[in-house]
Amino acid sequence: MKHSFSKLILASVFLSLIAVSSSSVAATYNVDELIGQAYLANSGEATEEAKLAELLGVDISLIDTTYKDESVDVNAVNDGDAWMIDVDPDKPGFYALKFGTGGLSKVLDAQDEDGNTFNTFFFKNLEDLTKLVFTNDQVLGITGAEDCNKCNIGRLSHYTSLTTLNTVPLPAAVWLFGSAIAGFVGFSRFKKKA
Image (cartoon, rainbow, N blue to C red):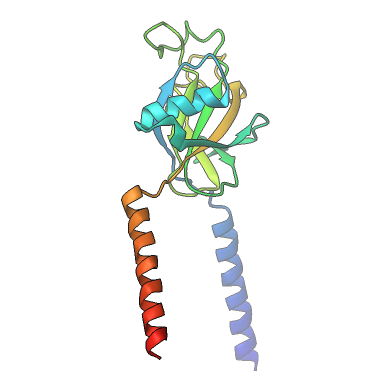
């Protein structure tokens, strides 16, 4: 009895140590893929949809804005090397981050052909769909570049979740319809014989 009681205490101490050590390990998140950047003067959904359609090489009618949030709650993750936004998407997709870049043109050397500082960044949400994860480097240091005291995460204006709409190709739709008709014809012949 005494021997089993000491084993029980030893086992519970061991499990407690494992629980404490595993809870002190910070979670690491997979960074989403940057697919493009742009200077967009207008923050409207149509402007962001048009740019994503251009980046993906698809018709704008296939892009849909699913959510836009202007009260963004951002957390530092991956030992401060990345930022994370908790979201609740319906399906996989893309997102755009829009930043205020006033006063950064002389600090950041990331501009379009007209000399405008890039302010909108488009990502493909890869792994954990409930997390939007991006790094300072992906957004050209706007969220915290070295030698830039004006650069901080507070410049994030909003994020927009975007999805591509899947359409059923016409030949497949016709084939499915034809299969259904053939099934009905076959069923009615089977019923007549019985």
